[in-house]
Amino acid sequence: MLLRIKIFYIGGMQMSEKILVVDDEQEIADLVALYLKNEGFQVFQCGSGADAVKMIEQERLDLVILDVMLPGMGGMEVCRKIREHHNYPIIMLTAKGEETDKITGLTLGADDYITKPFLPLELVARVKAQLRRYKRYNTAGEQEDEEVVVSGLVLNSKTHECFLNEKPLSLTPTEFSILWILCTRKGCVVSAEELFHMIWADEYYTKNNNTITVHIRHLREKMGDSFENPKYIKTVWGCGYKIEG
Image (cartoon, one colour):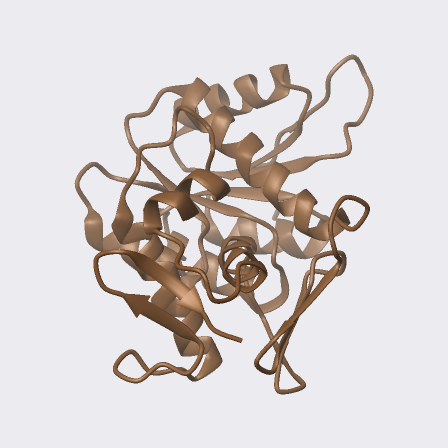
């Protein structure tokens, strides 16, 4: 069975950044692909979760835009499968007002979400923000230290690796960014608003402190840390979060 996939190029040349758009609504998928193509991205399209999983196995992707509601295998399951082997950014597309979908997606490893209907330019802005952050923590090192060590935590911004007591932690780009910021500002309280500004600086991004809360909770789960008596990420009520050395 042939996959329903469209590949876009600009000027006949293949671009380095590959984005997969997974949405069964053809008009939305085509519109998103058009805007991304105009920004110079190479874009793949799939209309189902099963096709998306096959494409993920075939291509070295840089980012996935993933609709929650898909025929057959849903977007949440696709997100989970991506996170089994890949750390590149995932942006979820959710129905208006479906807060449960947003929280579930973030918990499974999504980095951002946008609610339908949306402005294509806003989605493009978020794509660029995610790619900038992902690249920064995979190629950083000339302007800042590549490695930070705090209380058994070792993070390397060049390899995007994280170890806790010599055991590897698999982190999404957003989780890595949050942990990197907290570790490099060891002992200092960083507010949720400040984390937002440092991670999602784009003017189109709508703030929601609940997003940071979900990512912090997911980090604690991966680190085996408790909410009541945390050893690593501590909540300073009314102020923010900190990691002490």
